[in-house]
Image (cartoon, rainbow, N blue to C red; front, side, top):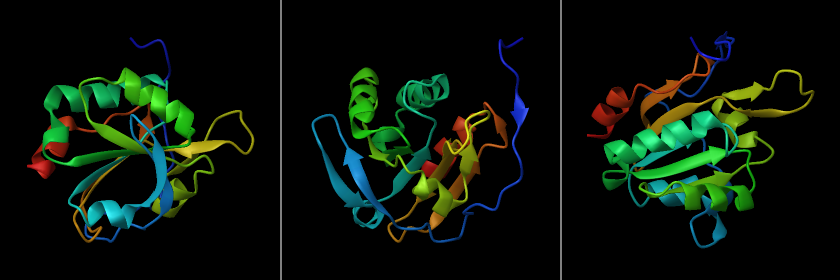
Length: 167
């Protein structure tokens, strides 16, 4: 039995398979530096697994990237995270997540999650939100090939389904 309650999240209208994912420009952090980049720039270079996750340091974030590393997803697709964490926090996360190559967009305003329809108000914190955990596999034109969005908290993607979509 977990030490926490599993909470059903309300229904939302989010980006779906077959739709074109919204473009955005935010600081993109790697293990050395960050620079403003657009999602469109990344997808023009190849497929992108866009991973919305809670704040860096939260156990779901660690668990998601740990599973990606174990399955070697980064060998087949560009993994790019998105969260409300700052570039400094992302840099620390990248240093701690050895074994998987990924970069992360910093979106402290949570506007990217809002554009995707997956913003989530944090309980007991007026005016504070973060993205609902979600995974979108995007092709070179930003078309969504695969979409998973959490329906409860905490929740994790079906890693076998993500792997099948990537392959």
